Every structure is written in structure tokens, then in C-alpha cells.
Length: 261
Image 1 (cartoon, one colour):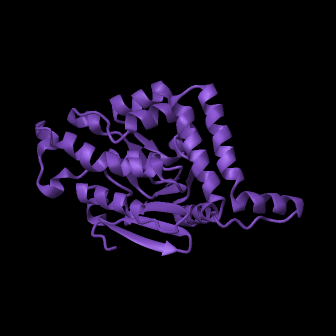
Image 2 (cartoon, rainbow, N blue to C red; image 1 turned 180 degrees about the vertical axis):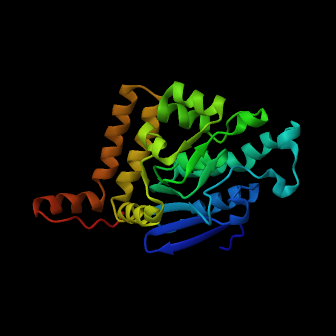
Image 3 (tube, rainbow, N blue to C red; image 1 turned 90 degrees about the vertical axis):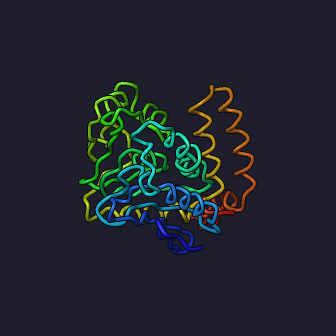
């Protein structure tokens, strides 16, 4: 499949999506959001996904002007349609993906770009990167799932600070707050991200999928429902070849060779 706004490459079980509009700091036009969704539909045998940005930015936010749509600032409802038809589905693909998703944030992650970064299972940021909810500066509200993602990741007070004050949160501060997995030197970002993504791509894929489902359940329900979900997930994971391999490797005191099945 060919893409115009993103670049998709495969390296064994790892699929890498690179946002590819560097002249706009990878601002996400509706077309880019759609292409991200298509890339997740076309995972094939990929067992992990790594997302990053080309050039100096990760994603500077939504770019409705790509279709000449000024309604984002005129209040004519275009942003509402764009969110429901393009941006929200793209974010949902990350959250619901059956494989681990890693975001390597190499620069500004603003607006829906911040949502995209935080929707991943693991977010690694360069020290020069930052996270920004800039909506308040133009009289709008956070979107793309940011309200849900931020509040659960860093709590009400810090989420309110980011959203209502529109402050830039550095990669280092984001790690300190627990907003992201890790902050590293710029020069080390892609090596660290690829190493993590490769490790996950060679892990017990079905078990990862069940973990992701249970984490989502835990965020939205009670302990009893979570324990029921865990029991069902353990039934599914326990029937896999990877579980048998893991058990044998433990008994034989060797590293397991998982195949994702």
C-alpha cells in the first residue's frame, strides 16, 4: 500500500510508521490521520509498531488547513466532523491495536500530536521534545482523547495545568510526572526506541494483547470485573504456543523464543 503523508517500513516483525510532513513539523491533516488508520489495518504479521516523526518535530497538531478548512478557528463545526471522522479513529487504532505500540517523540508533540504520542503503550521522548496542549491559546478545548489520557496518566491537578495554562512540558518533566515511559538524549532516541520495539516485537504477542485489554478494562471498571477479565485472558494466553515455550524455557533455564502464536 502506498501513502502520501506517512512512510511505512517493515523490519521482520516490527512495523515503523514515520509521520512524513517535516516542512509542517508533521502537522496532522485529516489525510494523515486516515493513513495512520490504514497502516494499522495493514499490520500483516507485524508484532509491534513504532511511530516517530520525520525531521525536527513529532507532530505539531491538527492541520485542517490542508483542505482549506478554516472552520477550526471560525467555529463552523468543521473540527467536530474532522475529529469524529478522522482524528479520533486514528487515536483509537493506537489504543486498540492488538500489538504493542511505541512512540518515539523526537520534537514537539502538540494538540492531537500529544494525544497520538500518549496513546501508545510506551512513549519515549528526546530531551529536546515537549508536550503541549495549546488549545486554550485559541479558545478551544483539548481533543483526540487528551482529557482522558492526561487525567489518568498524571492526575487532575497536572492535567488541568497542562490544559488550562497551555504550558510546554519537557521530555524530562514528562518522565518525572509519569506521563511517559522514558526521556533520553536526542542522539539516543531512535536506538532506544528501536531496541524496545524490537524486544516487544519478539515477545509473547497474544499475551501482550490480553494485557492491553485488561489495562483498558482496569481504567474503566471495578476490581471484580478486572479479575474476571484477567481469568479469561489467562485462559487465552495459557493456550498459546508461547506459553508452552515460556514454561519449557523456565524449566530448562534458558531464554524463551516466542513466536507470537
